[in-house]
Length: 215
Image (cartoon, rainbow, N blue to C red; front, top):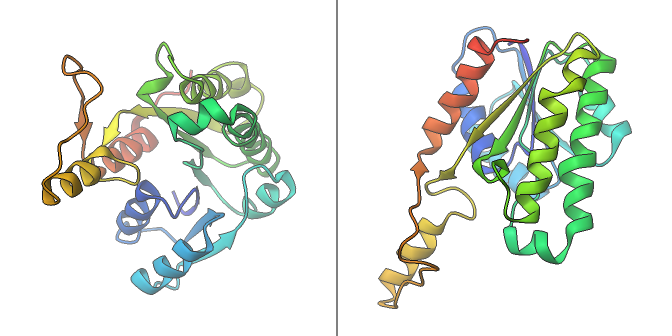
């Protein structure tokens, strides 16, 4: 891993990955690619690191994706639409980002001879019960199916569950409700939720980069 592109790089995972990669030896450039210009501005103020390049763009735009993968050897594809309720209301938008966006990433990596493509998936892709999970499962199949044999890029999928304290996590919402002395809404009391920390999520991604077997 030398020159790294992180799609959706201004999200919780992308920012923590950036923080960890900055202390890794041998990292020459980290490209943060996202649609969120405000978060890019805030990241730049936070890190103030010349090795980070901020690029505004969308994974739906193949020409831009092809441009930003130039001279990149590792792509961490974290960009996605993730809100479950919004996925049910706007399925076409989820297809455009989560499926077509991943196709664009795969094609660009192949064209640029990127060494490694790490796809960030979710536990909701396992026997999906909602449209968000379906789109992530389809993208997983593309990463781990036939596409992995079409070119030299090694492609891996990393799947994990709820990240405690990340954007959209239920924990900050629960904390807010407790501070306001309001009741905490729970969908089903019988349901079990499994959480990992943001650092554990980053550990999983970096472990996959070092140890995943390409078969």
